[in-house]
Structures are given as C-alpha cells and as structure tokens.
Image 1: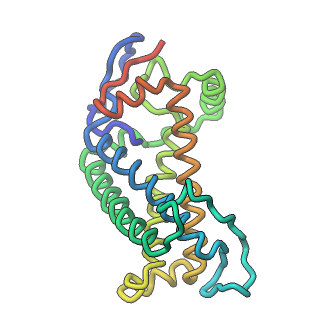
Image 2 (image 1 turned 180 degrees about the horizontal axis):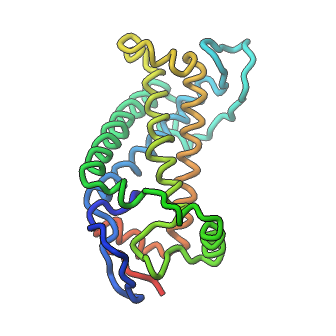
Amino acid sequence: MGPDDQHEAAPPKVAPPGTVIRRHGIATRIWHWVNAVAIFILIGSGLGISNAHPRLYWGRYGANFDAAWAQLPRFPAWITIPASYNLAISRRWHLFFALVLGFGLLAYMIASLLSRHFQRDLKLTRRDLNRGHIWADVKAHLAFRFHDPERPREYNVFQKLSYIGVIFIALPLVILTGIALSPGMDAAWPWVLDLFGGRQSARSLHFIAMTLIALFAVVHLVLVILAGPINEVRSMLTGGWRVPE
C-alpha cells in the first residue's frame, strides 16, 4: 500500500514499456499485507461491536434516550466478525488486531524514517501542487493512465495525498480513538479521553476514521484492477513492477 522505501534518490530515467523496475521495498510489502489483513478483520469485528449499540453521540455520555447524531444500520452477518452476534468475541478479535495495526504502523514509520523513503517518495513538490499539473493528472486518471511515462517510479499527486492522509491522519486517529475507548488505557492515560472531548466523541471519531479507511481500501482495490491487477499485485509481492504501455 505504501511507496518504495528502498530505491536511491536519483534523477528520473525514462524506462521503456515492459521494463521491470523496483517499486516497493521489503518493509513496504510486509506492512502492506499485514495491514490489509488487520484492517479487514478490524472492520468486520468493529461492525459486530457497533451492532450492540448502533448510535453515535458527541460528548462524554450517550445512551438509549440521548439524542444521537447518527443512527447506524444493523450490519448483516456476512460482513461482521463473527458472523453470529457475539459482542465478547468481536471485542477479542478487535483488540488483538488493533495491536497488530498499531505496532505495525509504528514499525513501518520507523523503517521509513530511517530509510528516508517518506522524504523521497511522499514529499509534495511545487510541481505536484501546480494547478495545471493537477488537472493533467485528473485527465490522465479519467483516461485510465495512472503513471508518468517519464517518471514511472514516482507516485502522482493523488496517490501522495491519499497515502499521506491514511498514514499520518486516518490510521493514527483510529488508533488513538481506539485507545480512548479502552477502560484500561483510560486508567493509565486519562488525558486521551480529554483530548477527544469524551468517550462518545472518541467513539464517533473512531467510526468516522474507520469509514475513511474503508473508503480508501475500496478505491485502492478499484484502481488496482483498472491499472492491471497482475502487475500491481506482483509488485507488492516481489517488489518488481513492469512499466505498462
């Protein structure tokens, strides 16, 4: 899911179609697949937990007779973990893979900072934010062209913005709000609840962050299919990506 964290910073070289280039380093590939499993199970178990009380509130308190800002649906069994309603089991799955998600993100950030791949691959340049360049990227996406032939290794501005949003905003937010919802963490770090304005606000922000991550995952999968699933999946397994026509 992340950009390459291994290649050297060098002037871009034009690679002809069919050339296999190294696009994803080992840290990125491991984190991508661990993260994919963790998020899938966290969403399923989180929806199972939501079925216990499908209403969202702002502030410190919220219960059956309080005014909710959102009334969630009862999620069907095929999308929850476990399939049959069992709040205790849903919480166990959720807690375990929350730890996987949190420590996985921490390890990935440390590895990426040490290799400087964040600075190389996710840095937004003046060229990225140029209005003409953004519009050119929009037209290229509408034509199902997702890479720059002159810079095939680089990510376009929409990929950079989405990765920055997920890695530095949505994932930390879902982790921190999850910590705020844990009674044990509240006892150790009561300031976390205050940071989000109370348990119910933290729960609402947790659900919003989860929704954004789920939407990112759906869009990501659609773009992988449109860009060529065999080439894209192979690059996330082996690191090698074949420059398309």
